[in-house]
Length: 288
Image 1 (cartoon, rainbow, N blue to C red):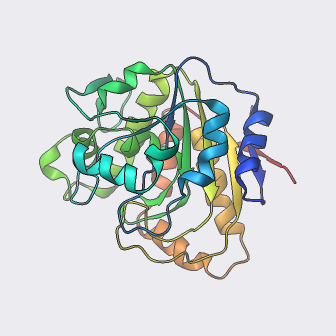
Image 2 (image 1 turned 120 degrees about the vertical axis):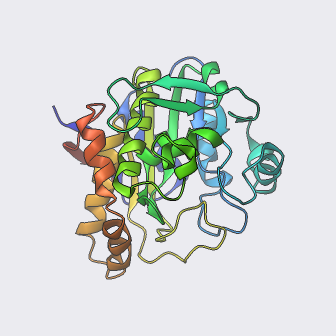
């Protein structure tokens, strides 16, 4: 059976709530709300007021993890200041999952590249999750969406280095690139399995730069906004976003596609599909 992906061209906060309701996958217990806090200086990340209606509707806790590279989010102290500066703590309860160690280790017995994933220990406080992703390009992954949020996004600072280094943190910047992409798929699978699939995914195709929200100096968006997608399948929702980029009549898509293809971004989707925690086959349900 094809996975359902709900889609609307209208990019408003209320539409996210509407599509979430249509999915009919109510999240139970204590809900973690994973999003990108935005690197200091980045102009493209989606701000707290945009996400506020869906976060208020669900009533969960915003969660983030520290980065593994220099910037304003690589230590707990700096990251908390950035969360405050960007307005997250003004509106929401915020939990920096790896604010303190030790990390929580998730086993990946079926992993192609890595057999374990390291996430912030506070993940254990939550029963379900919603992943709020800003779909755009990425300097290393080619693109960033639900799968990247599940893997690099939820990994602790050490876990990020472990994934990038394909199991060896000393190889952070020097590991084989396709192996890094496959390691992201491995890590994503471990989080899906940890929550027994009790996760919902929102991808917003807005402010689509070739660069990630983790870049302090990012290129401006290169193509027009496309819409909002909601699904219970992280592989299907990323595949649908990629398909929508390719199908767009916007000439600016060529720049984004070059970024995706030059980094072999589709490989992460392919490797995730091989791990069977979702499907690349989907039904796109368009909502006015």
